[in-house]
Length: 405
Image (cartoon, rainbow, N blue to C red; front, side, top):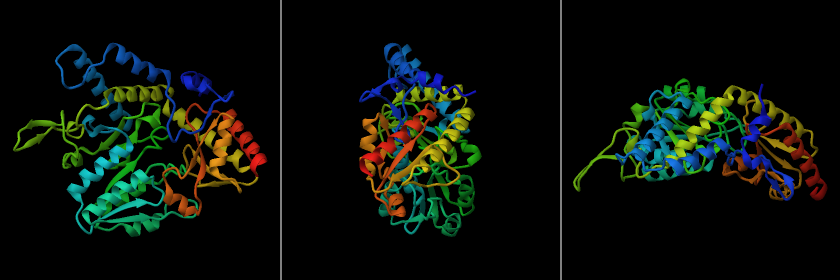
């Protein structure tokens, strides 16, 4: 049985009050809260074990290095990757995509080649590829979405051709929460020889992300979306492809030898981890992933699915409320508008009631333009949210309508 009340006790911030009201935190797609196990791990590490990694022969450095590499193994197991060296630690999803945009582009992209991405992508999975295409005189092609925000798979298949070198798509869209049919899309892309990058920033905390079963070539996510700290992320890549890529950053620990005439780069994964990596963040990420495993990811998924359905049913009963991306296959997110009320105003008034949501374009302006709107209110759930909190949100929205409608 899923014991959400017990889980909530592990997240200290959830007992906080805002303007005298109990915090109802429904902005988990922006960042998740941190459990005490992760917070304690960070503090205890700095108190008792801190030293730089891969650099010293002394006890503390050896200990830090061991914990850091154990964290890499934990992420490898979490994603079901084949090898630990396929896991590269970065600053986050955006950093991971930018690393790939440089390194992949330098190796695989030529003038006239094409990159395919979805109409519903986050800006972080658009702008780096625009920059790359401008630099390499390549072409950015867009997979269209239908009226509900789901990708037009037939149109996608027609876009695929031998010039397409990369397909880059979100596992779950951040503005709408739609689960893209990535397994089918990956297989289709591979049939024309294209590589596939999956942006898992909104997926790994909710859905299984088995990279071997998916057969994606690259998968990226941020730790702060999965109950761990900011400033650390993951770039997974198939070993055979990562080995062909040149690093985009130079510095300490990513080299074998250096002279003024020539530098020989280190083996995977180190050639992509220049300088001092956020090793404490990586160790804390491993703690967060272990916490999720301890709570049983299948139970988390089942609970969140039920809660999302409950929330959508409740919201749709509110007169004058429109949900965007109202489809069957969704995770975590519901984007909506109250008729004749600006989303910013809704967000500000909900905040006064202790309710945290996000308002605006959610770094997805093309998605908003697709629906002909300037932005939405986005509520997003996590493993610690409750039906009672959804009820409070709906009561809050009724008050907003009464004040501004």
